[in-house]
Length: 250
Length: 200
Image (cartoon, rainbow over all chains, first blue to last red; front, side, top):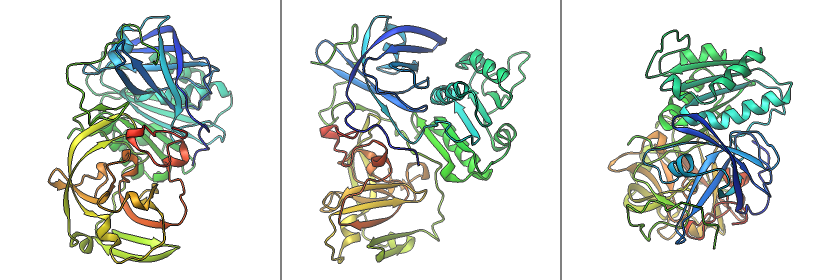
């Protein structure tokens, strides 16, 4: 069980967009300065509240992409074509604009790296975001146990943080990263080119280390398949932590 | 008034139903949330237990549970992750039926599930026609990813209270936090008072 979450009431804070980083054609990272931010743990998320002039409001939750960094919070947001909030955040918000935040939220899908136990990550699409906070945190620790990531996207161009992930893996012999593409196989592609399956997870993660904690994040179907596969590979169900988004397909 | 976001108008293509609580939006999908892998308990070994002070007060096998009088329930549901879904149609056994004939001074229950999940509720929130152990959804057996073979259904509270894969209720004299309630989520979880997190 993870440690205690933040005590006391979570208040809405006014955060200013200080930088906008394009990640892929549909994804941007929002670098926010949030005075009063209480700090967070890698893997947690935040509620965002937007208010129209007539008082109409919309709230959504977004994963935090960065480890704790004072009052700076980075959200990576994917534009959902039929969305109400994500198209505004990705296409309309400008540096200097302010939005309301409340958080951090969630005390289970978190990794602090306090023990040096192996970290096993499985990401589907924008499910990479909270896992990236963990990998960035791990890189900042300097000394950490082994880690592995399987990251599935539809196309190469939809892989978020690609360059940074490649750099992290190149700099760190204890970090293994494998990509799989489900909709294309570009010329020269050396990664996987199929949906995740038990064989792929076993190859990359190196089997079910009983001390490893696995974090799986992605669309519902993806998480169902990945979590079932990990249990089938011998992971203790209690050491497989999941976060899902999107409809179930029914 | 809260801070107005420059340029934000919001989606006004559908009239907002007065059945959607504050901070929620309506979805027509049925999103799935859970903290770990989906358990797959064989029906031959499934039981549902009411216990108090470590003692079993009642217990049903799957066949016995299926033989209990079942109701069709149509209710709106509200997830703390912001979606609400209107007029969801369930089949299930009223918790009143399960507690029938059990004398207790308990004021709370802890629902527990396969996979280790727990959630706490006042007893009065699961009695008098307010809660069910649901085993069907939309005229079909309940999918494992939605909590099948059976889940608690307490539609007037945020949906994390409607424990998936539920296997029993522990009767308690004092309230205790369950899984999410220990991790920052509200002890009670009334969507109409927007009781999402501690202190709300």
